[in-house]
Image (cartoon, rainbow, N blue to C red; front, side):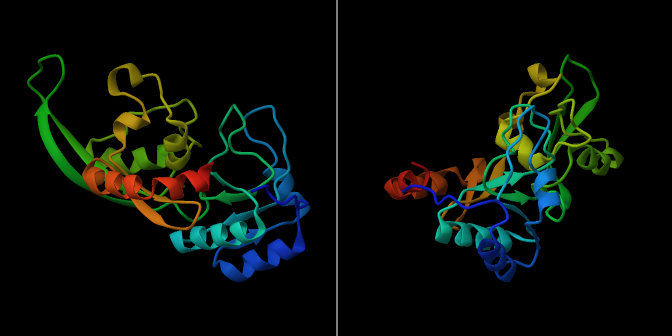
Length: 221
């Protein structure tokens, strides 16, 4: 299906989104200008920007977008150097509100690599997509922990953007990239459905995707 061509700042689309979500909706020229660029050299003016406050807001935006056949573009810190966070779309800025960090859960203890006698601790933590990497590490520091993926943009990059980009860093040769350090993901598909993907739900997830393969293909073709 061909996407509908709407002009940036379309008032009808703005009104529908404002009625559908609890978060802020910004279609003014100034805000669109701010979101026309990221860390790349590209510049594309978006249709408008939504600051979702919940997963329900994300689902509502996708529903409105489907009714107008327009794309949706999630955005975190806008640190991409390749233009992934700009486009003629409804931009979903997760950084403003979806930035909660959960408690650390212990996964286990082991020996330090290199044969040292000092025990190492590993754990997991739930984060929302708008959490900035440096803010996460500030939360982990009192427990003697840190998140090992360390891109140079850690003061601005969000965990959601890092996951989408499969980010790496200076220590990734030892600790791996995002794909090696993410256990589970809660995702919202283009049709608004929520799925858990990852190690702890691998069987159920695989069954779901296998059962609905054709439907998924139709969504992302």
